[in-house]
Image 1: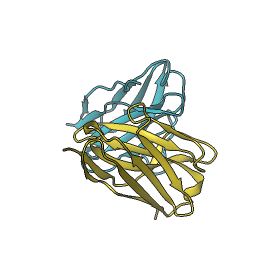
Image 2 (image 1 turned 90 degrees about the horizontal axis):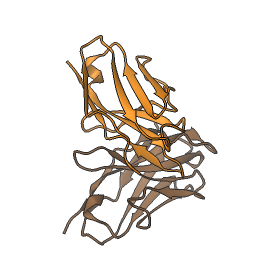
Image 3 (image 1 turned 180 degrees about the horizontal axis):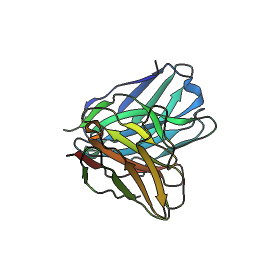
Image 4 (image 1 turned 180 degrees about the vertical axis):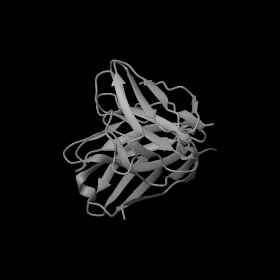
Length: 123
Length: 110
């Protein structure tokens, strides 16, 4: 079945780095743009980044621009989020999600979500 | 980039209709057709209920409908059922390939 499974979360000190992965299965990964979305404890959803179906275009929320890098390996059906210079306000559950539209289109709506991986930034 | 504005709470009785608003600006909701709504039950992943203002993904009941007027989008849930009790989030394309979410609305079915 269609699924996304994140991994790589954990506890990290401020200023350090962490790399999240998201394994996709059950659909043609290379034909969909992908998003990362996060949710801080007890808070709402916050969009983090998007990558085009072929990885050629990447865009970020202002809150993470210059610190986070989204990437993908279509040969491995895997999405990544490299997080550098982590701050306390980056503490959240990070979920990967699939855009509902197939390439080359975008709908900026996500119809498939992973269960999320928690990231805690604390000294 | 400021979050879209949603009321923190909404409520209705079973069978009634309730409408949740999502207010943006002329830089996001007001100019783009890419408004979405998500339902999130506690401890669960969000579920897409509406996309591109009014479209329903396969499997979403037609009790859920979306609309937009000016800088405000709305989600209407008709024939409220107990399982509709959840948090609801709107989102909108905000230009430059970025997305904004609303703060969320807790819907209570009385």
